[in-house]
Image 1 (cartoon, rainbow, N blue to C red):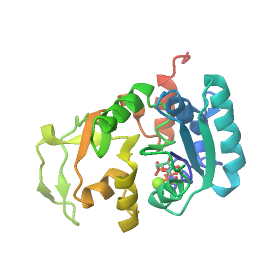
Image 2 (tube, rainbow, N blue to C red):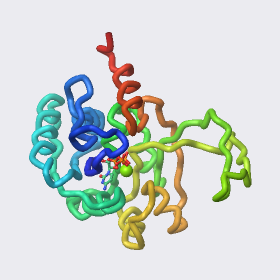
Image 3 (spheres, helix red, strand yellow):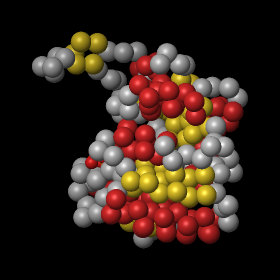
Length: 224
Ligand code: CTP
Ligand code: MG
């Protein structure tokens, strides 16, 4: 599933973030190209803003045609928070699906190898898998006044990305309790299930601000 129903308030474009062009293609189109290049992906559920469902459907059909993918595509309307959008997408999954990848359209340049690694780890038995990268900055935990209360050992920290992969039953149980979290693995952790981190990729950066969009443009092969 690709969640693309956010407004992109920090990007500040005139259209929702997933529909902002990068080298002439909306971010959602790039994200779907990565996801549908993964041979394990047999069904794509796109969660979109109500006003952009038709555009999402035609983008997904274009990508399927371009890649020669036989994946089925469904588009559903998202909710107020990211977790609500994931829950809406989960409700649309076909009966035959037993592994679910949840991907942010905003991480539109995630290489297919990351999808492959996540799927492989779930197939190998992990109930929940997230891609992550080492943290280069020293991270401080602070209190409400901005005073440092702890400095976690950096070598134990990972910055996590999407796609996050789950056994379907585990993700559904997690969302049945609550959909409120910044990532789906966080919900699964609350169930007490183990979450495995596999190697992420710097190209899976999340486009949040205009500077991120410029950084993503520089990653494209055709960049002048
Ligand atoms: N998302 C969603 N439904 C929401 C909120 C977010 O599907 N109600 C999706 C976004 O489209 C994005 C991903 O979740 O692909 C990560 O969210 P974020 O980067 O925060 O995107 P936005 O919420 O659109 O951006 P902002 O927070 O700046 O408004
Ligand atoms: Mg947001």
